[in-house]
Length: 525
Image 1 (cartoon, rainbow, N blue to C red):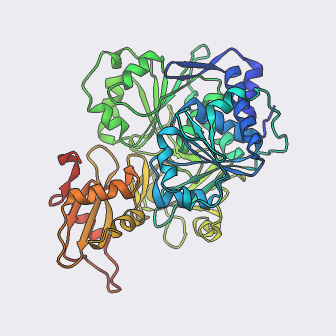
Image 2 (cartoon, rainbow, N blue to C red; image 1 turned 45 degrees about the vertical axis):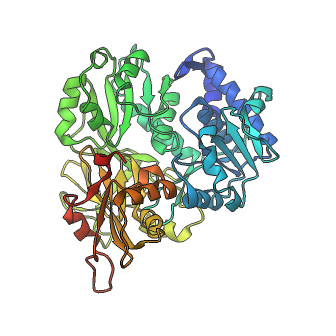
Image 3 (cartoon, rainbow, N blue to C red; image 1 turned 135 degrees about the horizontal axis):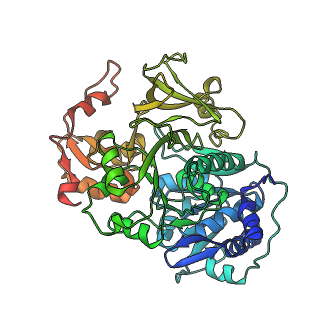
């Protein structure tokens, strides 16, 4: 039976196999039936708060069963989930909450202060549901999740009018050249990505072989949602969910939970590879790890050290996570793989003309059916049209394709910085630092990181006659921007290299490197 709503997926599994253990989280083990009943409780909480189809509900929540309950409860109602990076704060957080017009906010108590700091700037939030049950002062707006949950019914009739083409989620990018954009994704995009990911992950699994899939990646990103949770459900595979990545405990968890497949992103592999050998890395049952990027230099050594297979892919929030993937019987080391069956991927020049193999240009993507790619940027028609020129999504990434159809990522065209899985807007970094009273001008650039991807470097031009220590700027940043955006390197300059129109030439700043910069890692700031 073809399901229309993501919200019905766990409900169907609960009917088929109610007592099968599906979610493993810390000490908790939850069956399909327990998951479905808890999802129904949250759905009843939401309806008691007058949330209905099409309404936006924001989540500032850590990885947890409660996050999944809320996600699938919203999908059952037909409401729209807006998961927010838990390190987002201040102006960016208030912008997102106002822009998406969220009526309700679900927030873990550990992040509650982020809400307090901006609550007077919010135009639409009517209710704040605090998860974890801390002794917060409740009032007409602040609601205690635990009390609601205990009293809610575990029976709920899903909205049958929800269709695959309906909006299920708005995921705000970190912003690459300005304010964050809300990527609109349908129920269908979750099904299609989940189905194809399950097929590729389990393509060579023996018929009697059992799997457990693991992620420590944040549920507020598409990776943990679309290419981990969804394929785990669609393939009836238990999911092991960790709150966050821990290099020292990683292989211990693989053994403890009998994991066979895990997801990674950013520097995870590089960090693991730098860890000393432990007994656990020789006792695990992991057969496959998928993600990106995989540094070519450590690909084979990781496979040999851990006795696993590695597969790399490529995608973005706008492409519903993955659009390119290697497979177990068709892969190239250093490549992002070939286009998935539901996508057409090409390399365009600056005039949107397709380039021949081995010519470098922009990676562009088109889906063969509707509601697979994003449905656009929420309330940003001009940005949508710009990104979807001629029906092709322009990724802003530079790459090439070889004669056999394998694609290779080269670098980013957009003025953004990629740090440990996060796209960081240089505009937002610069905006926060320029607000410092002693700063005249600044420029943020990405510089190569020894582990993977990039680190943030800030060049600062001070007001005439001013003097400030780099530590003071880092402390300023801690109070004025998300933690993942805080620069690692600081360098003061008298002026910047500029174009004839006085724009800062950032490529020249990148060429300078970090040799003369102050490094906060060395000072543990």
